[in-house]
Image (cartoon, rainbow, N blue to C red; front, side, top):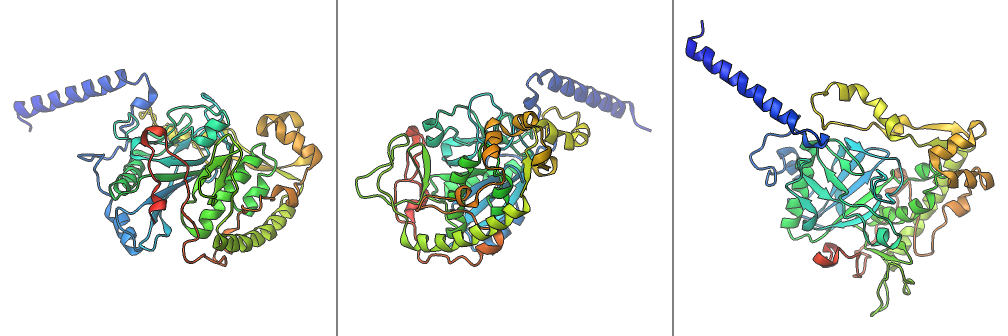
Amino acid sequence: MCSWKERLRMRLTSTALVLIFAAALAGCNDTLESAAYETPRVANKVEQPLPPRLLAEIRKKGMDRTSPIMIRIFKEEGILEVWKAKTNGRFDKVVEYDICAWSGRLGPKIKEGDRQAPEGFYPLTPYHLNPNSKYFLAINTGFPNQFDRANGRTGTHLMIHGACSSSGCYSMTDAQMLEIYAFARDAFKGGQQAIQLQAFPFRMTAENMARHRHSPHFDFWKTLKVGYDHFEITKRPPVVNVCEKKYVFNQSVPEGSSFNPQGACPPMSTPPALSVALNGFNEAYDAAYAKALKKYDGKIWYDPTEAERKALVADLRKSRAHDLAFAPTGSALKAGRLLDLDEVDPAKLAAATGTAAVNQMATNPNGDPQTQAAQPATTAAPATAQTTAAVPVPQPNPLAPQTAQAAPAAEEKKPFWKLW
């Protein structure tokens, strides 16, 4: 039997736990304040080293622990990828994570309060790391960037953070965020000055582009896939600039010329080796896109709402009802669906995809591969994963030094890829 001292100690311990729990509830007016469930127990989350499994993967791929990284996000697939530079300067994927929560629907962030998560290319500096976030750890996406500001897009505090709950952010679990933060911290310690974040609506394959061709965001997505293609070919983050309110990638300009996000583009040219690779890439894409158009003829993809995605994981949230921060959003691929164009109510379709999509279908219901896939002479269209391996990889590096998309004025620095 327990002695009276042991019984007293147990009673005091139980009382202390009750008081701690009550205090935690009292501080949960902001539901994101409580993110303790499954929070890693580490002595110093900011300096926590990468786990042995990732260090082993880094060594296996011929990388240094502090070599540069790049982050890619795919909303529809719900994936965040971390890519890292090998000793030969090309990037390879180290790990991918399932995104726990992202709000809104497919499409870019337009204005403050629209609950949309950003899409585009964003340079991240050490300034964007937030070790004191109430969402465990956070990395600011840098929204709005030069493109967003030139197009009048507004919004603040758009993050990649922990806590698995989002209102315009990309939210991970705390355990995932511990690793993502460590990747960025180590890269900055190794001398990287800007990490490129590439945020896409989906993997920009020919089939996915054909499936989403009726979206009102399709023209914007075609500009993003040019940068996507350049990375697929070179395995190096593209040099990003903005002119005429548009993204441009890996463009050489005459000495003394510069890019003005809202002004006319200067004379531009694509490095010759990259142009050769893009030609082969485009041929594969055109064939794959034409095939996909036949597959989706007479069909339109219904992009699910956030509520429809959440309904898929309602049971998961119920199982963690005590964790007020946990608010996962389900898969857009699983919640979305193909509809027959002939059977779609135009009013319902307008609510699902936007009025612009309805107008587009009235004049071009099946998509035109010549106009939909068309790109300026200096750009390219995406290829499928199966064709990527056959694309010639330029040797040596085809990317000539240029002026890359600037970070905010307060921390303007030369992007890391210009140092190669």
